Length: 341
Image (cartoon, rainbow, N blue to C red; front, side, top):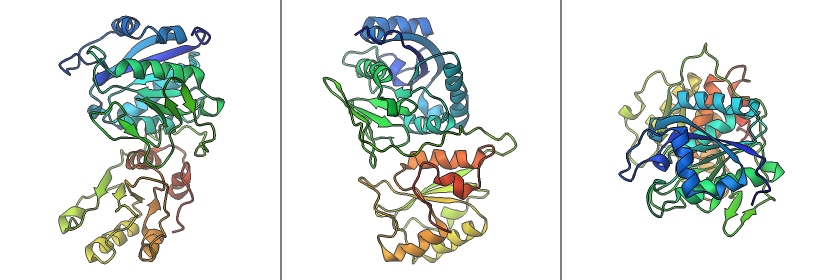
């Protein structure tokens, strides 16, 4: 158990259910207090590595957004300079998928692993999943295969996921997260079983930094539903980009005149539209249905196997990043080929 104790791991607590009290209220906790509680409840983790604790934030994750992602990424990059071998971020579950995707892009150039985890029940209550999630996360950080060592991962329940392909699936199950269109990197059972044959998405080794001269983008996340398209749907002004949740097979109401008129208006205004679905399974390709070819060719960038959460984060970063290539080239990093416009 002690063979990896020479590794130094920084544990950043950001709040969330993990550190709540039994009444599910956030309580003020110090780094020393959190360490003491974890030493009593998760002693095995301290045999695996030297753990250093820091309270980075104390909020429910529903309060986090882009400014939090940027601040957290600065701390992650500094941790590498301080000599840490890995970083464990304790995070609330509701927006964990957004934060893990953001760290994947904002800290792309670092050479150490970043792991996100959290809990469905607070550490302070009986039968909490926080204990296993914490111990498993430390073990993952100390035993990662070489091909995964510079990635952002999510460790939760019985699986390890890539940070850009994960989303929350349940508010009750201990296996709270899923990766609908990308295989899990490992299964957590009596041992860690790594899927070493996975072909990871190509990683852009340039870290995205915010251009302070650019205004904060306003991104509309629009979810199509039958009969939902009315004039009021499209009256939002000054939009920088759109994540459009299509129907399961990547289809949309192409015979709806208002919908098509709006797409043409967005195209004239050079507003990027990212087409995504919540479908399970591998990417089917946007040309599966003949009626959708023209629509995708003219108006959409493909989300491919990205989750809607990751597509939102990537669109945001593509619009505020410093010294990035033109949008169409920027969007193709970590996704498959973009449709030709």
